[in-house]
Amino acid sequence: MVFGIMMVALSIQQRWSSVGEQLKDYKLHGRNSKYVWGNKLKTHDYLMVVKDELYNELMSDTLNAPEMIAVLCRIPGLGLAKAGFVVQLMFGGVGCLDTHNLKRFNLKPVPYSATLKHDTVVRKAWQYLDQCQEVGGSKYLWNSWCNLIAEKYPNDFADGCHVSAVHLSYLTDAYNNVITEVV
Image 1 (cartoon, rainbow, N blue to C red):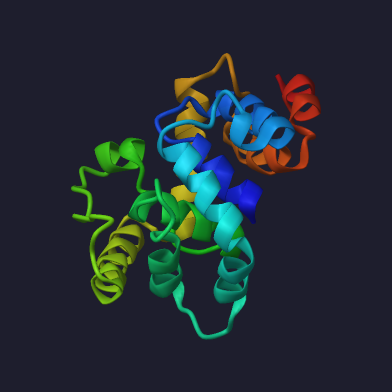
Image 2 (tube, rainbow, N blue to C red):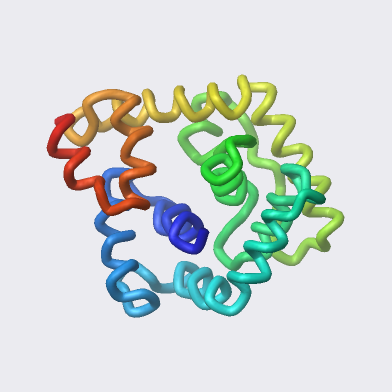
């Protein structure tokens, strides 16, 4: 779970093809990784303190997707979009309305601040989830984003399936083989 959340944090404002090397460095050096600084360092430090409680809370049967997003938004450095990305990766729902998706779907981000109370964040997460559903839902967001990134960076990825596969391979250290085999 920690590596998944850190992968998401490392991806903020980064080219997706660079995230694997960043995550590899993070796995080797932890908080001393050259890629873990600023809010990403705050994300790491927070996770090291609360990882067990966070895991138990997210894995409980009592949370729906907006509540999971609200729990993840407590992590420094994560807002609605990246919390939605974590839920998408770990539980197969929601989606990531990142800058690429906001632009191509002509959406305005749901206003969010880390200082909001939990109930307000849950309400904002419902709005965020509604936006994800309006553009086609989790599966559509995933597939179309992967295709978009493959088209935008054809030297990095063979196709959208390659972009999708790289997500898992980054987490399993197999990505060097996947990139070499496909490209």
